Amino acid sequence: MGKRIDVKDLNVFYGDFMAVEGVSMTVEPRSVTAFIGPSGCGKSTFLRTLNRMHEVTPGGRVEGKVMLDDEDLYAESVDPVAVRRTVGMVFQRPNPFPTMSIRDNVIAGLKLNGVRNKKVLDQKVEESLVGANLWNEVKDRLNKPGAGLSGGQQQRLCIARAIAVEPQVLLMDEPCSALDPISTLAIEDLVTKLKEQFTIVIVTHNMQQAARVSDKTAFFNLEATGKPGNLIEMDDTQQIFNNPSKKATEDYISGRFG
Ligand SMILES: Nc1ncnc2c1ncn2[C@@H]1O[C@H](COP(=O)(O)OP(=O)(O)OP(=O)(O)O)[C@@H](O)[C@H]1O
Image 1: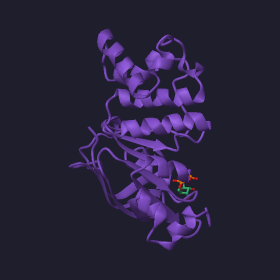
Image 2: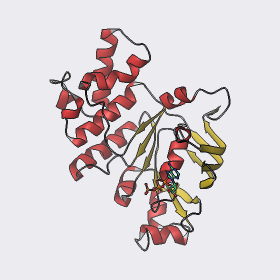
Image 3: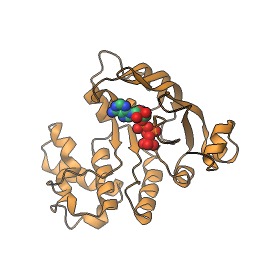
Image 4: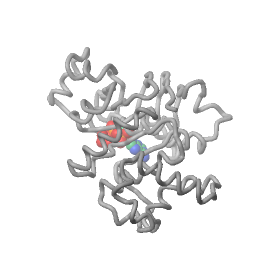
C-alpha cells in the first residue's frame, strides 16, 4: 500500500483566478510530506487537487498532471469518487457524523460501498480503531455517538474512518489546528505509525510539527495578494529547516515573515 504521487506543471484555478501556479513535485510512497507557507499561498487548494476535491468548488479546475503511480488522476476515464476512495482526506476540524455511533462512523464508507457482512464489518471496526490508536479508549462504547468523544478522539475517529476504506494516500489539512497539545502529539505519533502503510501529505502552520513528523517539506509562497502561490522548494525536512537553498524559505522558517 501507499502510492507515489507525481505532479507536473499544475496550475489551479477558482474561475479566472489562478490560486496556484506551476507546481511540480514527487511524493514518495510511504513517506510524510509537510506543506508549509504563509496564509493564502495555496497549500490547502493544492492539497485538494491531489484527490480531485478542488473541483467540487464551483469554478474549481486545474491544468497539468497529477499521477498516482501510473494513473493520471485527471484522465477522462477516471471516476473522481473512486479517486477520493484511494486518496483519503482528514480535515482541520474533526467532523464525525454526529448522530452515528462510533462503530457506524468507522464503517460508514464501507457500508456505502455495499459491505453488509457483520463479521467483516466488526473486524474492520477493530482494525481501523487500532490503526488510529483509539481502540483501547472506545472499545467498551462502540455504540455511543461519535460526537461524545473529545476533540482529539474525534480526530482519531475521523482517521479511523478514512483508513477503513483502505486508501493508498492520506491527505491531512491542518489536522491538529483545533486540538490541544496532548491530542496533537497523539496525532503526530499516529502519523509516524501510519506512514508504514500510507503515503501521507500534511498541511501545517506549525513548524515544529513539520520538523517532527515529516520526511520531506515543501515550502509554498506568494509574491503578493492576488498573485498565485508557488512551490519555492521541496527537500528533506532536515535540509529545509537547517540549510534551505532559498532565502524566502529561510526567512519564513526563522519567523521573519508569515
Ligand atoms: N472557494 C474559493 N473561491 C475563491 N478563491 C478561493 C477559495 N478558497 C481559497 N481561495 C483563494 O485561493 C488562495 C489560496 O487559498 P488557500 O486556502 O489554499 O491557502 P492556504 O495556503 O491553505 O491558506 P491558509 O494557510 O490560510 O489555510 C487564496 O487567495 C484564497 O483566497
